[in-house]
Length: 80
Length: 243
Image 1 (cartoon, rainbow over the protein chains, first blue to last red):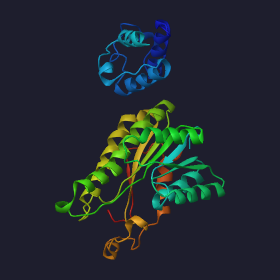
Image 2 (image 1 turned 30 degrees about the vertical axis):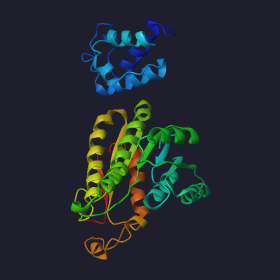
Image 3 (image 1 turned 90 degrees about the vertical axis):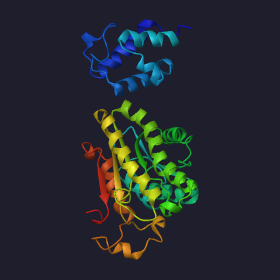
Image 4 (image 1 turned 180 degrees about the horizontal axis):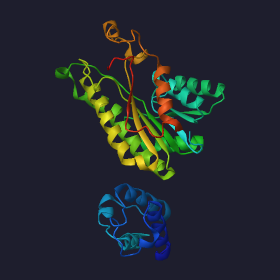
């Protein structure tokens, strides 16, 4: 049920991370969120955005598993 | 205020809560007046606000019920056509007894209402606030909590915990333009303080009880744009009692 493409998900996540203060040129699939200075408040807001945009609810345990930008994209793509 | 937001005041039908509703409305906030049982009084608050040219709506809900927080916020936002970006956790109860005589029921009632509702509503309201990059949460604490008052161990515990919650939640969201503060009223003339002995008044440097409007003025300030750099603070409105 791929209602949302991986590209759409990647764009929303990337734009969100940049809006939280990450440097756009540093955001790529392999980038670690901690290296982008993304913290727990940012991740909580990102979870909200993902829920609003894609209807995917991420639990605290889900979020704890996310290390890289690619992890977040894949996790959402799997469930969207 | 933020032009896109409305304010929700729990326990807004009477006493300090009603004064807070009127003060926020006078500052331009559309106001949701939450009440549990006093529908007539809540409607009177709404009527007074409307007569003064403001916007308000009365919304029933027992905030001690864990299921009520999210629906209450949604009802307020739907009725006023804007997300709740101002939240005043004012609803409070007393069930006084000496600690050694307190029942579990009275402990739970006071903690669930005074602390539990504050936590649940704040948690839910913060979602819209951090997205809006603007939010104002004002929790109504008390001088009781930071200091002792024999016969109010449950109330004191709940209000001290509200202050601790206020400070920690505030630092978590400060960089999103969301402030969380508390006011700590002293002896204020309301139904809820009836029966408090006059001898307590003698300890108040101002030598008089405060009025609900004086507490409301402090809340309105903390909810205003002017207070953008005030967060995690406790504003005592107590005639000097805590000094």
